Length: 146
Ligand code: HEC
Ligand code: HEC
Ligand code: HEC
Ligand code: HEC
Image 1 (cartoon, rainbow, N blue to C red):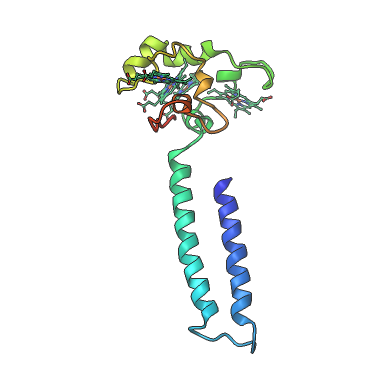
Image 2: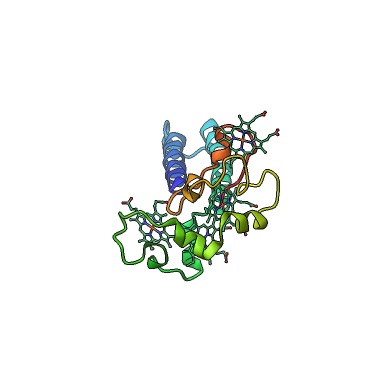
């Protein structure tokens, strides 16, 4: 989504700058200010696109992780309507309880063992949109939540 917006912006700006560089006497003059502007913009924007791509890769949505493992929608939603809440027991059945999860994520601070107790998984993990670091609402751990 973000990447598509950035790419569209890149195309629009480069197109606009292109029009600029042909303005005036109607010929394309190498080394004109407009050319330099286009080159600078392209360089700058390709950097933004690259970092947006890197970000997209490191912030993959959990739905993709699950789909790639061959899980069907029903693995979480069962036969219920999608608008019905997904039971957390489904997550725990596959991933283990808080005590078991805490062993899998032993680094400190442990997101699954803290003074916050047993939060709903969805406090941090979202399936269809970006997850959030609830801990960083108050702290500055910079916790990366898959
Ligand atoms: C790993 C578990 C999981 C899988 C697999 C999954 N979902 Fe979900 N889905 C959820 C959870 C949890 C929610 C509640 C909101 C959230 O966390 O994003 C949800 C919410 C939704 C919603 C929004 C419901 C609403 O009214 O807000 C839709 C639509 C949906 N899922 C469709 C799907 C479809 C289609 C698939 C299969 C391609 C799928 N889901 C697979 C866990 C899952
Ligand atoms: C049917 C089993 C199943 C269910 C139900 C399920 N998952 Fe998963 N989940 C998996 C598998 C398989 C993976 C891929 C990694 C692995 O093999 O452990 C995974 C991966 C994950 C990861 C790690 C992703 C990563 O990139 O490291 C998280 C977080 C996660 N699931 C959260 C949830 C949450 C929250 C729910 C409930 C809404 C849920 N899962 C429901 C099977 C399941
Ligand atoms: C306070 C935020 C938070 C809550 C609440 C939370 N998690 Fe996590 N979870 C994380 C973070 C952060 C990581 C990444 C830890 C790491 O990379 O070592 C993680 C990692 C995971 C993983 C991947 C573990 C692995 O083997 O690497 C799974 C599976 C998972 N969580 C499932 C759950 C389930 C199921 C629940 C609810 C019972 C839950 N989490 C609740 C923050 C949270
Ligand atoms: C609502 C705010 C809030 C949230 C959310 C929160 N904390 Fe805290 N946390 C605090 C406060 C307040 C303290 C006590 C601060 C102090 O004593 O300096 C604390 C203390 C801690 C400490 C001890 C720090 C120390 O220096 O001894 C750790 C570790 C910690 N939190 C981890 C977490 C983790 C992990 C999460 C997410 C699961 C989390 N916190 C979420 C407010 C919060």
